[in-house]
Each structure stands twice: as structure tokens, then as C-alpha cells.
Length: 262
Image (cartoon, rainbow, N blue to C red; front, side, top):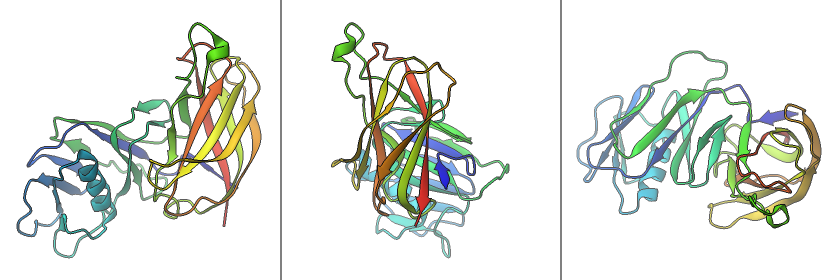
């Protein structure tokens, strides 16, 4: 049995609202430079990324470049490819690094390759349209109950999709045969229900677990509920939504998910 999020590798993020010519992002020992036009092979430790018409496509290229994938719009230095310190994945959904919230948008989710390391990893940028969360250990995912109706609990609904694992991440750190249990603590005594979804593209979401219920308990009380979810394929991400009988959209739930490997 294993869990995610876990405290083995540090996690970070970069959120983009715009990317301009010659702006850079530095991650560990690699510098990623965004260019309107790609030219010569970059020097050692540098990666050049061609800016695309759609911001999402440029951010997806950045994630691919960090992973070291081949693409006509990515130029690596001679003999280099993937980032030696980290890997990264694109997501357009909101997510959490423990209690640090990352809003839905054009984001990369950064994962340290090494486990149990304290070696500093640089994460910096010259992009004016980029905000960063430095790498940190994150042992849970915090979900704010934004579907709560402030005036009428009977009209409260499921909240927004939130990413637990991004597309293409399964297979790198996780080989998931089935999800067994969800552990949580919460900020209110509301009854809360969780739905789990899988998606290969963050456009189409397929619900795989419906209405697993966490009965009300005081915050800090650890609750465990069994779920029954089949394997998550290597190209899919895992997402969730939460509903409640509460009225306060600032209430939240902190979760960990246990899984069995193939």
C-alpha cells in the first residue's frame, strides 16, 4: 500500500498568464528560454522553446522540455535532454501543494526526481506573466468547498475539478492498479461527499467513484473511507470534486489517497 500525495519528493509549480520572447524559466541546472523564432543549438545547460500562438501550447512544450521529450519546437543543448533534477506536467485545473493553492489556468506541476533530498533546487523566472511556488514537501491536497451556497445549504453543489495527479504522470512515479482508501481531515462538521474522475486531456472527465461520504467530524479527526476504483491508465490524470451540506465556501478538506500498485 502507498499514498499520494506523499512526502518523498518535493513539489512545486509555475503558473503562466503570458509568455514573451526571450523570457526564461530556470529549474535546477537548466535554463528554459522562450523564443519567437528558434535558431542555433543552445549552449550547455540551456533549452530553447518556440512560443506558440496559444499560451497553453507553449506551457505544454515547457513541460515536455523538462521531461526531455523530442519536439520540433524544442531545442536542447548537444547531448542533453531531460532536466536532471525534476520532471513536470501541464495542467489547466486547480491543484494544491498541501495548503498552497494553485488556481486553474496554464500551469506546470513540478516533481523532484530524487527522494528524500534536501539539496536546494533553483526555481526562478524572468517572465512577467508567471508566478512560482518553490519546491516543498506536500503530504496532502487541500480542497476548498467552493460549491457551498452561502445562503442555503440545500442548494450547495459539488465544487470545481481539482487535480490530484496530472495527465501522463501515472507511470512515472505511480503505477496504479486500484485506489483503496481516502483519508481526510476537515475544517467543519459538514457531511462531505467526494467524486473521483479520470481524464486523458482535461476536456473529457469520466467519473470513476461517486459519492463516497465522509460523515461530519471535528477538524483534525482523521477519517478513512473505502473506495473502489480500477486502474488509472498511463496517459490519464486523476481529479476530484467535493460536495457538502455546508454553506461556507472557505471550508476545506485535506485528503490523502492510498493505492495498490500493479
